[in-house]
Image 1 (spheres, helix red, strand yellow):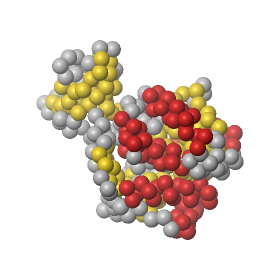
Image 2 (cartoon, one colour):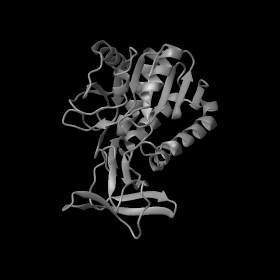
Image 3 (cartoon, one colour):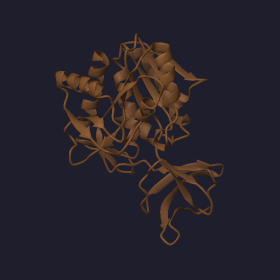
Image 4 (tube, one colour):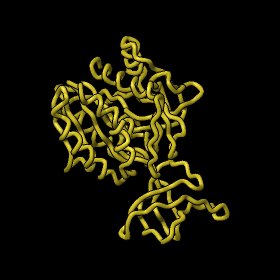
Length: 304
């Protein structure tokens, strides 16, 4: 779990994924020699901070967003949300401006209805603040801020170790409206003819999706994927013997939004471990669900 802890600690809120993108490129360069198949690594000009790993003759693509939720400093100690973080008084926030590193606390002005920071000096406007990472691991669980979606990224890296044919796309902006998957899916479809996607992201623990019972295959959220493709995913999951749960929700979204709204005939399905304490500094995931997530992705990328 050391790699997951490293990922959770990297400052990379939506729109400023550069630190995580550079970390991943260095990690891939260092470790790909140990992988079963050497991927073509696409990044830089034309991809902004996104990264594509292309293995062999791909038939399907994994999409994992790199960015996190957080806050942007406005005026008079005000904060503006990046994405949808839970904002409770006393949450520890960290960041950096031209005057140095910052560790401050979250406040809420009930009279004005404003989110504020509590710090010894004024923080430069436009500075991004994220939850301070307190990574905790037990025999059964992992707990930290930003398991959504550093765990999705971690899982994709684990799958990369044995992947022979497929694409892994590390995307940006998912937590704050998206934007990068539109050009990534265009590039992938036009250059490789791939039109099958699995979204490697983290979902919610609910009354129907329980911790420790297996990775969740989402049959729908705010969007509805093509039924025949979801049935194909479920059939592969059944055949694999990997523990899984079926999720049905009416809210929530992911990188799948841009796949479904694209001008290309992409099929997609969200497959991810469920977490509790969503979008807080204390997100928690059961290790059994992490294991089944990696195992199911390995099976899916072989069979799709």
